[in-house]
Length: 90
Image (cartoon, rainbow, N blue to C red; front, side, top):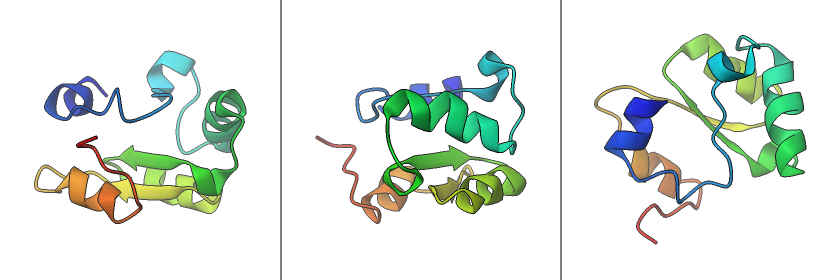
């Protein structure tokens, strides 16, 4: 997560950033998405965005109904999020 927050100014764009390593629950376990993230935000899965570099974790987020993006070094994160209506340049 530090690489993402350092490379992009995402901390101001999101209400909450959750790292599974800090939570003690491994992805793609649904608990990391529901118990640690969505419940804290008081949001439904379709109201959340998940970014990860591993396909199985992205699939886990999608399985619970979240919008999920697989991060790669060549991914234009801003464009991927803009496709979901989130503007990082606000």
